[in-house]
Image (cartoon, rainbow, N blue to C red; front, side, top):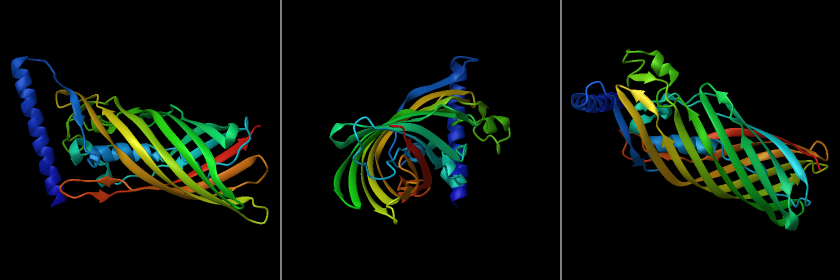
Length: 311
């Protein structure tokens, strides 16, 4: 029944496109129809789910509670994260859940950064997901955080971080190279993509993270930690695609709030070194056709960090 609904939806959408194309060609022979405008989406729409999924996937976390660092201390760190493979149903996010998008481009992402100690027990962190193209998609994300330990009683520690991230994801999302390679085959290229698109997702995220940590082990060289974050997202998807005689320049906008939980373990093999890993979980609501109710299609992923204090 669901497959029948999706097939009918695709047929209706393409029929509307064809009507628009015919009207446009009738009024200006040989001209390509151009779609422009802004559309505000519900935060539960399939397109919104995809945007908040990848915004959450790249969200910076603290890998433990902020410590009482010395003013002027500098820690360099390298982070890595697993990118889960999405099913066909999860990738069916285009045009309100009627088009399968090629979202499985990589299985990992990385971030480089540093944390600098400030007076009064504060610390500031900077992180950057470098602009390296992976299978036609390029990310360029900058993160900033300010943290402080708010309660300590050996071996326990609580901390609070304010965090933010801005940046872009660019690539052939609406019309991938695989779609275009399908040519006129309605099965391989059902929306008639004419060329790889040059779409852009703009991410602005701002949140707060409350974290707890406890030292364990004979030399206190292990640390268990967990955190809870509340994050506000302001997301945009700028379409830049050509399909079925249409040049689509629509801007999709959505905003809302998500939560995230982490649990992990740090290991301190030497005075200046730290390696750690965590499980990241964020519940993400989505309403997919033909269902009329929202469901939780959550993000789970694994992250690792290695850091060295240079001063």
